[in-house]
Image (cartoon, rainbow, N blue to C red; front, side, top):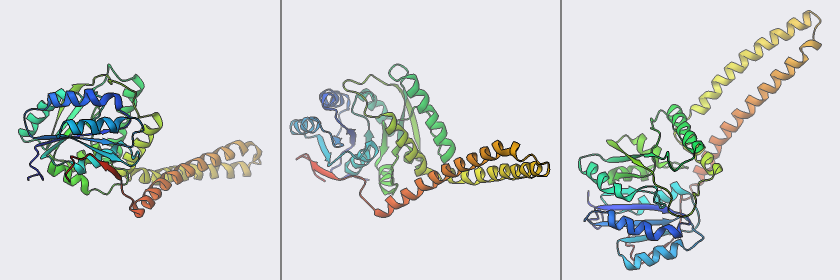
Length: 313
C-alpha cells in the first residue's frame, strides 16, 4: 500500500509543554533515522509555553519536520490519535517527547518491521528512572487490565512502537470514547515482536501525568475494553443476597428467643454493608452510562487549530 507521497517512515510525537526538550529531541531523532524518506510529526497538545514556536522554527529549517497544534489539551492518547491520522508513512513510529524513549532504537525497530512484523512493540526497563510506587502501580494496572479485558498485556509496554500502515488504519476505525492505543494494538492481534530497552532520564521538565490523570487513564482504558465490572455486579448481588438471607434467619432466631436488642448491631452492620455495595455498583453502572452519553454526542476526539506551512494533507 502506497502512502500519499511515498514516505517510508513517519515518527509521531505528542507533546505538552516540552519547550526545553524540542531542540535535543529533533536533533537526536534526525541523527538516528537511517537514510530513507521520512517525516517527523510533532503534535502540540495545547501547550501553554513556547513549544509550538520551537516546532514551527524547525519546520522551516527542515522540511521533514511537521507540526500539528490542537486547539486545547485533549490528552495524550487523543493527541497520539491525531498524529496517527496525519501520518503518511508506510510505517509509523510513535514515541514520547521527553527522550525517555531512545531514538537510537529506531534502526532496530525498522529491522524487525522489514523482517515481516507489522507491530514492533518495546518493553521498558525503568528501574533506574521510575519510583517504586510508579513501577508497582504500572505492573498492577497491566495485570488488572489483562484479567478484566482478556487482552493480554505484558508489563513494561508503552506507546513507543512501530506500526504498519494497515494496523494504523484499523486503529483509526475504532470509535472508542477514551481511545487506549496500547490496548487497541494488542486487541487487533497483528503479528508482533517486542524489543526491550532501558528507559533514559527525562532531559528537561517534569512528567505531566499526575496520580489523578493516571487513575482516570486506567479507569477509561478498562471500561473501553471490558464489561466484566458489570458482570461483577451480578456476583456481588448474589453474594450479598445470600449474606442478607442468613442475616434474616439470624434476626428471626433472635426474635423467637426475645433477643432482638442484641441483634441490633449486626442488623445495622449488614444494612450499611449492603448500601455500600449498592452505591459501588451504581457508580460502575453510571460510568458506563456516562460513556454512552458521551458517545451519542459524537464529539470529535481532537480539534486541529493550526498546521505548519509544510504540512500537505
